[in-house]
Image (cartoon, rainbow, N blue to C red; front, side, top):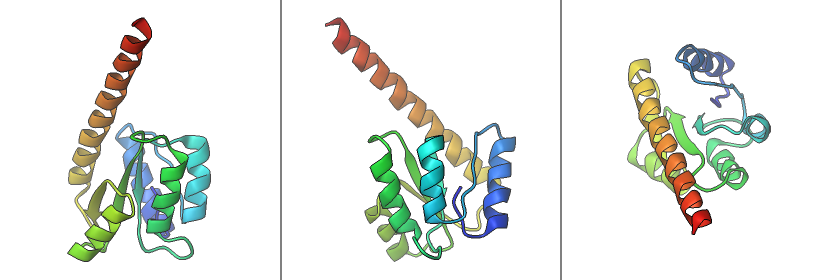
Length: 134
């Protein structure tokens, strides 16, 4: 969870942890990159409007750190007009969630997303084994 509001980042990370997700909070783009290099998150909730490195630039940098299809980036932002949604997609975000949102809805979205990631990972593992066995 990356948000320049410390309370928002810590609060959502706590909610995610209580839902059995392994969560970390970061408060700006640069600290998000540092956390990502050691933690290797599969999913990142990322605010757009942050001082310094904004969410768009942070998303671009996160994409450079992770192997393709190994990470889902979710724009978690108050900017929910169609132009902002399109800008998030161009910046490399996979999903866009407007703030505020119901935690129940966010957790359901995360569960579906994590299930998709697990399926991708299992499929890739099977393909690698199949190639190795000939």
